[in-house]
Amino acid sequence: MSFNIFFFIFTISAAKLLGPENWGLITLLSLFATYSSLFTFGVSNGMGILLPIALGKDQKEENYIVQNAFWCLVFSFIIIGLVQIFFIIKVKIPLSYFLFLVAYTFSIQLLNFLKVYLRSHQNFTLFSYAYFFQTMFLLMGFYLIKININYLMILSLINLFTVIFVYSRIEKKKQKWSINKKQIIGLIKVGFPIMIAGIVGELLLSTDRLLISYFFDNIELGLYGFASNFFKGVRVIGVAISIITLPKIATSYSKGDFKSMLYFARAQQWVSFVLMITSSVIAILIAFKFFPIFLPEYLRSVNLIIILLFVASLLPLSKYANILNVIGKQGLYLKAQIFIILTNIIFSITLIYLGYGIEGVAIASLLSMILYVSLIRYLGSRAIKSLISKV
Image (cartoon, rainbow, N blue to C red; front, side):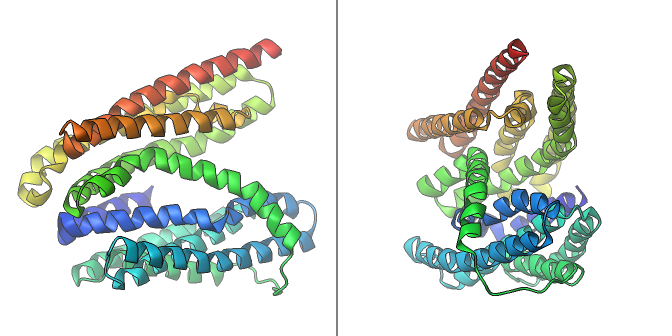
């Protein structure tokens, strides 16, 4: 939470210094870096499942899993680099940004790999120190952005310094260059579906920016991307509460205690909603008060911020999202997400052609989120009734 608070302030400061047009370019590159994880084939996700299992069985197997996951990740960097250079040339972005994009993408993947390693070993002390270390370097980022160092390069340096910090403090084990084809296939087989689900979830919440990048220029994308920072900032609250309640929901389900499972789901829903809607109202009041003074170039973003904050605040009301994943209905949940993404695209394009511009895209996101919440509640309620009837 501390890291995300500082990161939110940092992004607002960076957007102020860069202006809407340059921030639009940063928004586009950040999205592409996120979706570039597709070419890692989910090896880190697979390691996050297979490594904890191996730790309870065989030390030798543990080493092989880490080695193969790492070298597979390194190989994926070649593919990612080729895809990203093609993207840079295709959309006619200055080639200097290729270095920033590649460095940012690689640093994210390396840091994520180490965090999965720490989580698998239940080394939450070092896991927490990693975030603390990132926060400290983020404070230096305020100075670096002020002297005109590229935003993505600053984040890359923060991530890479954190990688060095974490790696220097983990127990070193003898590594081999050998690659086990069978184990790599196993990592991908387990991790790829998990990664796809994560990308679809991210796509659900970023379809609007992708459409704006296609239909509008960088200035419009910058205005919308600036507003989406508030969306992401408030969403962190819901994610934090979900991290707390998910294990409780899973434990209740494993015991067949459906009453407790629903209790924790309701608690997650209402605590998240109350905190998120309160934060949203405060953020809106601050925007109205201070934007005309400190951020006049982003005044048009105020209406977008209002809409997107309500989109974020509606997310917890879906209630059954974690339950569907826990009870083995991930496929149903994934289909619902894909349906809403397609719906959002249809709503957005319709409103764009009707002349509502980027505000129309925001409204389409709000309408889609209302439909999403209703659909997940319906599917979740039916799944629970079916589950109880079988007991």
